[in-house]
Length: 381
Image (cartoon, rainbow, N blue to C red; front, side, top):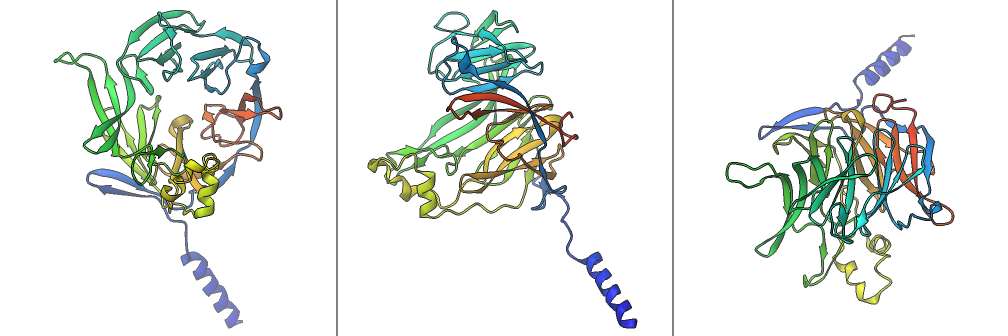
């Protein structure tokens, strides 16, 4: 009997004092808070419970000739499918009904030429389009209102006068890539204000050994990622080769840094051949194998979620990723996984869930929306 009691006490002590999930630590480094997260999420892995709510097949409309397309969605459900290279933007209502084209090709007011980095967004209950160093505003019915020459190519608007840009500059023998915030409101010297947010040398390309040729591969190419949270006016930015996310306000000040233990995925020769299969069909491209990095990038993408949450697409293997979710304080709370047959790679998230594109059996790309029925602290159910 005494032996049994002793065994129970030992086991109780083991379970009480044994290994436990590490907690989040907040450590100050050079005056900036670093949120040090454990390797495992605080609340575990969650498989999304989703319901397909909308499908738009743009090719069923004779007027629509998009080819590959990107997409945006307004809070009231209006959808615009657009091709950045062909300067085409097609509008659909919340029921998927076609509402017509937004812009015309050309050089006149409200018109844009092709191949100029064309993009559209919803702002202030209006539609804004950018390209060819200008932006134009349209009302929600698609009527042209106003345009303005910029001198810059915006990546994300904060407001009509303020937007983020990405710029590459020559710095002696190196290239310097910058993410900056431009404010067109004139200062006392009559010039636009530009605030630097992040910069790094020799990004966005993998060079040949003689430095005469370059190529880009999204799994191995170092670059600066960034995403702006319009509701909370925060920019999340960082270098994709490390798991370290800088959270900045609109003054360019670092509010805190999000970190999580991570080791970059190593790749062998066969892995590199798989990653470069798109290029190795040509004999002249086989030099790429000798300069491809031996490790993949750490972060494939980052995206904002509702209510101040953040999704980080962490590289987990060759052509694979997992989605880490952080709360507004920078704590690693979930790994978010889609159900079988659904991909989050191109997903854009909203209060109800997300929209994305999928390929049909006939090879056509279509737009779809999914309602997320769980994770109620992030999404409306």
